[in-house]
Structures are given as structure tokens and as C-alpha cells.
Length: 140
Image (tube, rainbow, N blue to C red; front, side):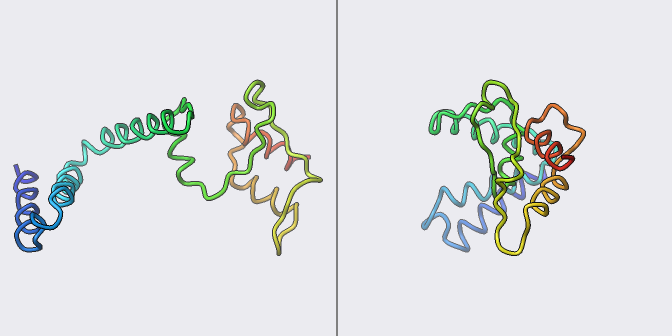
């Protein structure tokens, strides 16, 4: 009941005081909905799963991308760069890194790139082809 009162208060303050009912009604309602969801922490995982499922559906319809693991969306969303060569990996999941062909930007060496990649990967995930390729390249 306290959450409902808070939502009503946000609707009234933003709608009346900030002219939200005249300028942008949908944004006012969305703001109140955000307050409602944030005030009920038990609903947060459900909301997150629904949003990720909607994102996976959008990726499938817009970009013809098949998402097999919803947590993978969280990992990809936090990336700033993904370097990958998909030749053969879709059928065999066998990736390898050719250390002679590593591109290092200014101020870094190829060895440092492999080292930083190794530090960011998880050596315990033997079933992950990217981590396995980086760990193997670092150990060689």
C-alpha cells in the first residue's frame, strides 16, 4: 500500500506541478511505473527476465540473431569490444589465437594483449571456446 501511495504521489507531483499531464503523459506514467517497480525489490528479477526476453525477441526479429542463453545478453551488453573470428566456430566451437597475427594498438605489445585477455578470462570455464582459446594462447 505504501508503494501504491508513492506512485500516486509521483503521478500527482510530476503531473500537476511539472505539467507532466500536459507535456508528456506517457513519460509521466512511465516514471511512476519505474518508481513502483523500484519500490518492490522482489519483482526486480522478474522484470529483468522479462526485459531480457523482450530483448532476445527483438534481436531475433530485427537481426536474425538466435539467443540461446539470456545471461549471455548481460555479458555482451557489458562489452566495449568483441574480437572474434567466426570461421568454423559455428560448427565445431574450436577457436584458436594465432599469436603472430595479434594487433596491438599504440603503447601495447602482443604479449600484453594476450596477458590482459588471460586476466579477463576464466580458466575454469573449459566449455567456453573463447576462454579456452585465450588460456591456450597464453600458456603457449
